[in-house]
Image (cartoon, rainbow, N blue to C red; front, top):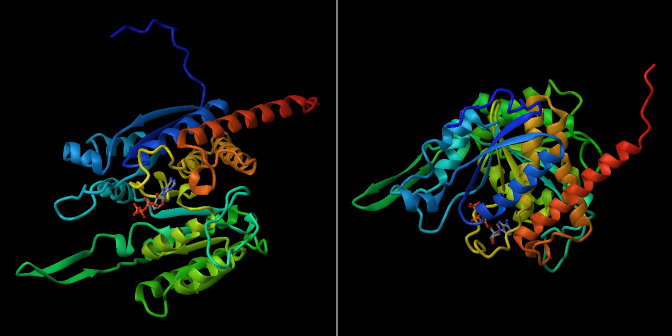
Length: 403
Ligand code: ATP
C-alpha cells in the first residue's frame, strides 16, 4: 500500500452521508441503477458527498450461494450506513426449505433488525402522469386532489412471525396467522403520523391538517387497542384534526374522495393492502415510493415488487425508486439537521415533477414509450436544468449590503 504524502489529500469539508444500495431481484437492479445515478448527481450538484456500498441480495442470490445476502451486508446497513435503498426481493422458484420466499430475510432482517416501525408511503399524483383507475366509468380528477401519506405499522400485526400450520399424517389441517398489536408499537407509529401531519400543508380538499385512523375496531381487539392509543396520542396534537374510519369504508373513500385525506395511519396488513390501492391513484406501482423508518435507521424502496414479468426487458419504471431516493435524502437531511441534504431530495422531486409535466420520461406503464435508462437520463437532464436555474437566479438576486 502506498504511504500517503503528508498534505497530498485535502481533508474534505463537504457534508458526507453513507448509503448502502441493495439492488436485489428482478427489476430491482434496473431501477436501483437509475436511482443511484440520480441520487449521486443530486448530491454532487448540492456540493454534498455520498459514500456508497452495494451488495447483491435476494432470491436469485440465494439460488446461487445458499445465502439471502452476504454476511457483511446487514452489519454495513446497521453500523456504517446513514440509510439503505433496496430494489426488490423475490424470484419465482427461489423458495427457502420452510416454504418462505427467499430474499424475504433481507426485507424482514432490515425491518426487525433495524426496528423500522413506520412504513411511510406518500401517494401524490403529478400532473402529466395518468392515474390508473380505468373502466366503464372513467374517473377523472385533477392531479392535485391526490396528495396524501399513508403510514403503516411495520413491525407487528399479521406480518410479524407468529404463525404456523398443523400437519397430521402429511395433511395440513389448520393454519394460524395471529396478530399482535402492542401499545408501544401503536404509539410510536401514530406519533410519527401526527408529527408528519404538522410538517405538511393539510389535505388537498380543504387544506386541513388531518390524521385518519384506519382500523376495524368494530370487530378486532387489536384495532380497538390501536384506536384507543390513537385517541390518547391525538390529545397532544390539538392543532391536527382527527377521525376514525373502518378499513373497508376507507377503501371506498380512497377512490371516491382522495382529496379528503392528508395523513392516514393503520396496522401492518391493512396498510399493505390500502397502499397498493393508493398507488393506483398516483399512476401505479412504477411511481409509488416508500420509506421504512425507525428512530435511528431507515430503508427506502419502491412499493413495487421484483416484477418478474417485465424484468430484463428494460421497461421498468424507475420513478418509484428515484422518488424513494428523494425521500432518503430528505430523511438524511432531517437526521443530520442539514438543509442541503433535504434540498437535494426536494430537487429530485422537482425535477421529476417538471419532467412528467412536460410529457417527458414516461415509461410504458404510465402511457409513454421510454425505457428504464431513458427515464433516468431525462430526470438527470431536468436535475441539471433545475440546478442551473437555481444558481442563475441566486446570481441575479442583488446581494444585501452589510450594515
Ligand atoms: P410483491 O408481492 O413483492 O409486492 P407483487 O407480486 O405484488 O410483488 P409486483 O412485482 O409489484 O407484484 O408487480 C405487480 C405488477 O406491477 C406487475 O404487472 C408488474 O409488471 C408491475 N410493476 C411493478 N413494478 C413496476 C415498475 N417499476 N414499472 C412498471 N411496472 C411495474
